[in-house]
Length: 77
Image (cartoon, rainbow, N blue to C red; front, side):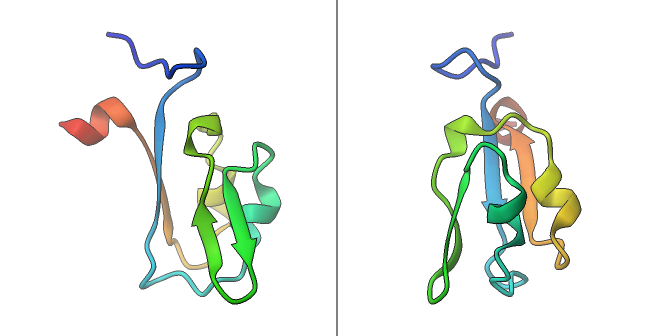
């Protein structure tokens, strides 16, 4: 089973639950791969999902439990 993305990395699906998210921007701050963008008015958005390395720092640091990171292969099942 190949779970690699086009760049050879692990293909992850990053989801922000917009109902739970209060747009604090912590996810964008802690992500070393710049998966998230943050705008004061628009809030946090997933911009570079392909760069995710599955460290789950965003998941661990989110005070609202609004972020989920899953393997794309698992998401299809």
